[in-house]
Image (cartoon, rainbow, N blue to C red; front, side):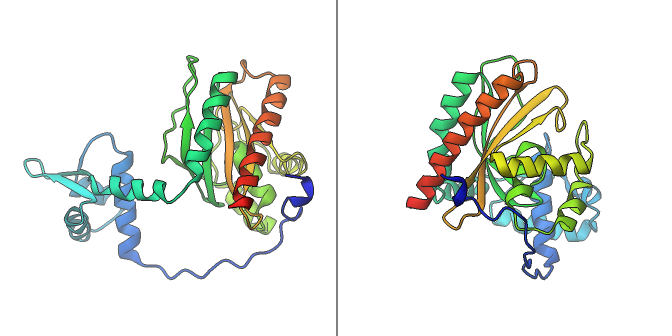
Length: 267
């Protein structure tokens, strides 16, 4: 993919679609995400308190989710956990999305060659990206991430790419930036300069900002409309990735990402 094929260099204002709040849906999704994060089943009262819901409202929602197979309940303890109905939804989502199967051999190759954790993420918007494929290194270092893990869209190395290639006004990007949680937060002016560099280089490197002592390298994948759709990311302890190795890895990720972009253009 030539630099000329990259989306416009400067973010331009984009009109966001108008969303009408649907409280029942938002609450149901919040319950599913809460139970997805919880290591143990939870009772209605605990769920309601965690999410700031009225207990009776929470009870009605979890009963519907159980009826739909998205939650299950232990009748002896009245505690709720995720149901197997979610598995069929996830399987259908993966089957209709070819990117994970295309990215997996790339991630396996990168992880084995560089001894890093290699990740493919779908970039949704400024607030969301989701891990869709993963290959873990054999090194003692392990990044706590799994397929389905969600992260803010502007965080880490991929976040710099999101800011670089989105068409979002800088005022909105800055607002979202200040809500991010970093272990070593970068100054916004410095981060913006790194975003501009990422736009030119078409890759980004985060050295210890998101996770102390960890370097993350990311390259962008674009869809047929020229929009950033996914990223390929490699993660390792910073001591394992000095500047020269990180730059070399970035170039390899970029080559692989460009190949995946060409596949999307040909589809």
